[in-house]
Image (cartoon, rainbow, N blue to C red; front, side, top):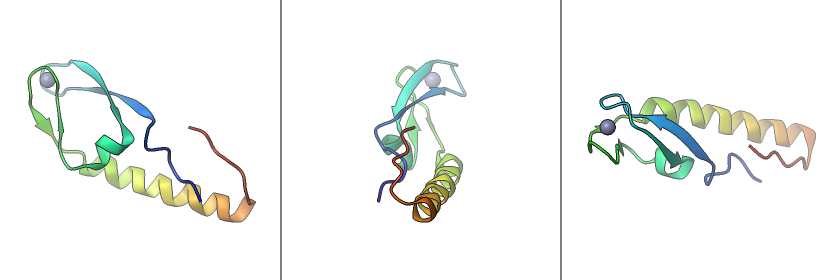
Length: 72
Ligand SMILES: [Zn+2]
C-alpha cells in the first residue's frame, strides 16, 4: 500500500537567507534540514507532523476506495 511518494521534491525557502531550494519528502522526514547556501539548519518536525497526517489520511482513503493509485 502506497502513501506519499518520498521522492517528491518540495520547494523550500530558507528562513534566514531566503534561498530557495528543493528537498525530497524523504529528506524532510529526517530531523533538521540544512540550507545549502548559509548552512543554517531548521526544524522540520512540524512539517513532518503534517506529512504524517496526510500520509495516514491517504492510506485511509486507499483502504476505503480500493486500489486507486494517487500520484502527488
Ligand atoms: Zn540559508
